Image (tube, rainbow, N blue to C red; front, side, top):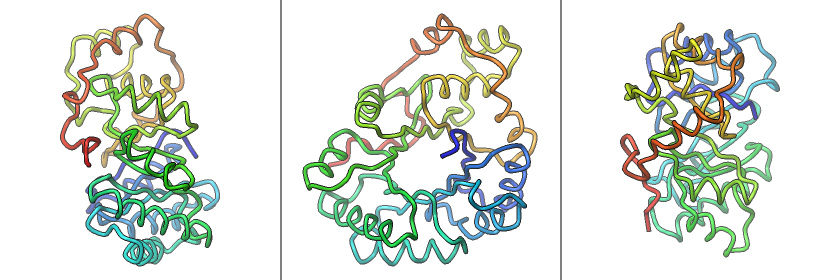
Length: 260
């Protein structure tokens, strides 16, 4: 899986061009979802971008109103058809909302679709430790990915530590804090490395071993967000940014990790 991905949350009008711009600037990973209503545009961009399919990585997700075994089989088939691709690289349960029984039914259906070859790998999003443990307790294989909100203000350290211990890749959505990055620490570090604050935030995520998924529809921002491999933030500066953690209170909008 390519580590840096393009987030396309609710990107409708510009989704196709955003994906084309991203691929032309070196991105090989696009993070979509049924809820975003842009699977068709992502699929068209993947087919038409000129890069071989096997070099690209496409993610989608099933939203909680569609949870359940039969519904999940139907929804993943619909996603497959909308993308118009030979396979979907990664398919996630979008959140733990719905209750344990429906979550597990959904997971079983994803395992079945993965075994059929339509989905290359499967994972979860916004899952807390207890939600992943219920999969283990049911005797099912663990997810390969957990996609959660991650940035210096919302580090979700217990979940991250659990995932790393169990070999689960941690993907970071909202790595740019939805644009709320006017913090004197970020600005100080950005000046030191002659980079922008978004570049510093993405680099922070990469150095923690996360897979960041910055969202943008502007070509210059897409290009800028990928220009993060020619510098390294020092341990001292990483510690300054780590000290900004606000726990759950640092989430920017929606963080359903405490769902029953």
